[in-house]
Image 1 (cartoon, rainbow, N blue to C red):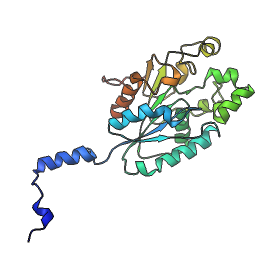
Image 2 (image 1 turned 90 degrees about the horizontal axis):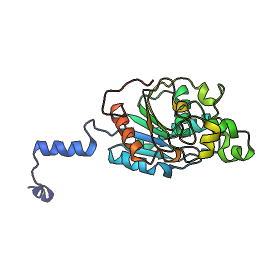
Image 3 (image 1 turned 60 degrees about the vertical axis):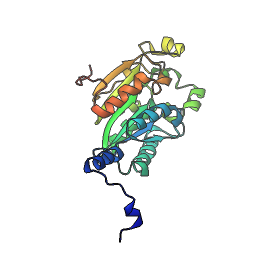
Image 4 (image 1 turned 45 degrees about the vertical axis):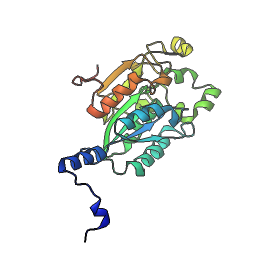
Length: 251
């Protein structure tokens, strides 16, 4: 006797069944993941627009909230990134990328000087102080600056002994996007003296070992929100290049 439920099933061709599987789980059987790390004194809500665009592009996204003002860079990186990689949401992802803003990029560099991750994919850093920020050089001794920015913020100077400058070359596939528009005229005119985004000079976003470097006309606080940044970020994660042209080494 036929089961009553089975009598109601409509026959499906093998090609239709295969299309359904591909649309559901993707051609590799599992989606790639992206970990988002916000900047100093910001929250995960600052990465919301980037998060939505990545979700719409088919990635599994873990948008991390971490207490950026409460500890130094190394302990923040250790706790934040270890927990994110071990999270249930990314458990089945065969490859995990990172998109970071400002301090978030230094956390990634710090973490991967001490750890390896077989699933690590590509990294895009937005406005990272990879060689430190001149703003910290000028204001780092002020009590109010140290209070507002915490231990991690005060490790971001440009001196040879600052933490970013002690981390060395990156050992992963990295693209950096820097801004050349400032809405903080005091920082730009008095402290930085080079093309900058109001917090970090373009030159200081660069790091040895990066694959590509892109400059956009966006200020530091808005790098993760603008379409001119979001679109090349997704292209880099998907293809390894900000453009549709073959990748070229940075100068």
